[in-house]
Length: 322
Image (cartoon, rainbow, N blue to C red; front, side, top):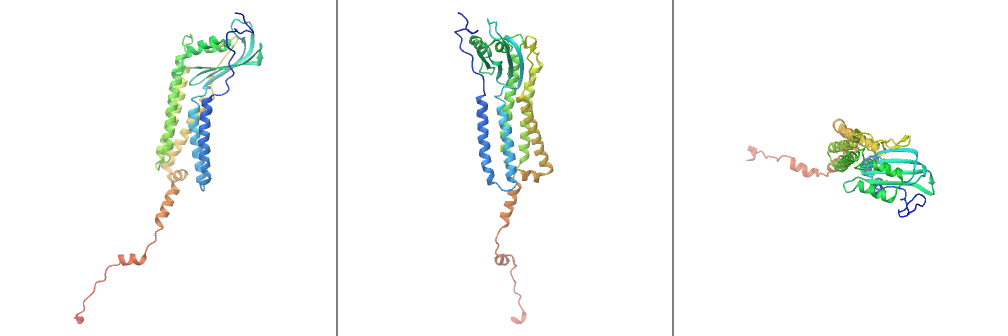
């Protein structure tokens, strides 16, 4: 078999670049629909309770959507490097490309973008995903990529995370990601329970539960960070190396977790030091006042009440009347 533009003729053409994650888009759309539904109720709420309702709803939905979305994002760790490297095996073509590595809880994404995009009669714009979840076989995905004839930089980076790699980081990343994902799902459950508890008169339990939500989110970060204890595997392209660091999803999870801590501590503190303000914010104080007004508006028959409460008149006998 002969080569044509550096590609074996029996290999399929390169995959299109990865644009977005469908799961993330679905989660965002669902929560936007919930937010729109709740916001439609706001015009029917009177006074300051309208503002308090909007703050509670938007904060709760923001926490919930962030917990779910970061499960599917691929930038818990990320890094970029620009290098001159060989494009494909058995080819002498050297291209200038941007190589990106994005590590998520479900796997690793390797990005390859040419500078410029059109080089060696091809469009160099790749984003390949290699999953390491329980129902996925990372080594099998890597073998399929070899059969497809993907560019050499993608295969070189992906090979670092295989089970047979001397780097020995596959098991560490896989276990850390699974524990982090499990912690986030528990945080989602506690977030859901906190919303139910905030609908009850005992608001302090909702504050405790939102504190637990923040704690599980921080625990997920600690679980994922344990991968840093392993030896750093160098990813070298000539004289330049690909360095990775914590990405946007990691810092976003940290920010939302700390925000849950602040919200939970605020609710618990107000419960013990200023419960009236807490009940007003959750629209419970006004309900009690309305119930009190309803019970005091009672019509009383004064004549009947006086006849019932007045003591009976006892007749006294006078001797002259006998």
